[in-house]
Amino acid sequence: MSSMIQRLIGIVQVAGGFWGLFELTGRALLVREPLWLALLLLGALLFLLTLLAGVWLIAGDARGRTWSQWLQLAQAPILGTPWLSYGWHAGAVAAFGIARHGHWSFGVRVPDIGWQLYFGAGAHWFFGINFLALVFFLLLKLGRR
Image (cartoon, rainbow, N blue to C red):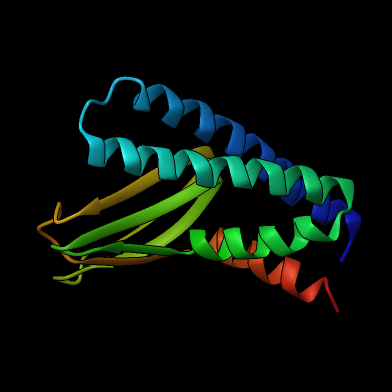
């Protein structure tokens, strides 16, 4: 893989990881419920790992490519059900989704971060995919060969 593409992915990860870590840590300081605090801290940990993997990726460390692949893959699915809602992106998003009654949406946001993990919070069905995370995952995966 071109080192320029690897560095670009690393820069997006570092920026998104730093922004997300800052944002969720600030929110966690205001939350009093233990479950919400734990979910925010889990998100902050994921953003911290993304930041670290981005630094490793820019430095050319093999750990950066491995960690970045897994973290990009974790950003690909977007799910909303009456029992569980999940969505996460660090740095940028280009997503397509379909709701239960055939409504669909497409959105691109650069720069952007998002963290959503709720249990039993939704009333609607929604399935989506973050194509940008999937493309980054494939670029990192194919670049290994």
